[in-house]
Image (cartoon, rainbow, N blue to C red):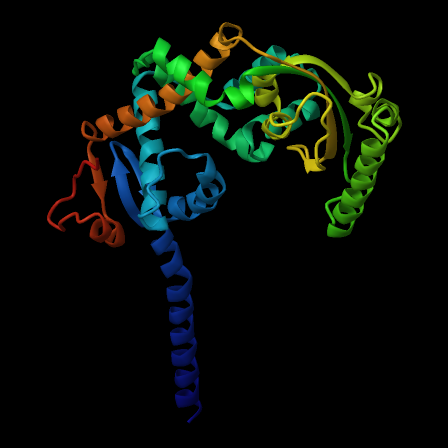
Length: 343
């Protein structure tokens, strides 16, 4: 009787252990499942899980996304494109390690004239529109992309008609020079209460300067204003709206419709400061003064479009295999076909 009891106990313990192992091993097998290969690079279910969060944070910065497709398909395409860059970069001996990334950061700090790392991080967040930690994770890909643009992709320069068309279409934003004063007050924290309090405070400041315009410079020079602006009583000397647009799209958009002497509504800039500005002077900017900047903007747009076209063409040249059933079904890839070229 005791022997039967021991046997039953051993049997149930063995079954429990088997089921436990099945439950722990199965997810690992699922995560390690290869869903695609690009040349010698494999993409697993785990890669897809990791990339989904990053894709969601980056997608507003991605220019050529087809939102008619499912999220899963878009993330797999995102991973395929990046695998193509890795494969071709390897063929071209383009190596990006941690030391290369740090060297790139130092070079950018030097170009910007910034010595403080925290100041650089804030500047990059403002210019890129993404958190610095996300920007850093993107930097190795951007370095490889930049190298491949030089080695493999011929970007056509913008034509004269493209430059003129861009100027005419954006003249209201970048076609003038302004001299203005600004009062900017940053919140002490990110709470809703602090945001509401600060908005009311800056709204009261605006009422004050509307009733007495001469008081703007006095308030702009007070301790309440941003320290970088306070010393010059909030005054920003003549700046083309184009350069202002590059520095702060929000400020440029607010300043554009205001007449000389006009005072803006309260607005929130890219640095989350609550601001009000007054136009001290306004004059037109000739296109020739903006030509170089316009060419740079158009060239960057052409770079993005040309690189995207190159990626599509390279897909036709590299062996790409898809093993994900949902992707194959959505993209109408017959099961008998493993290799495909997606347009």
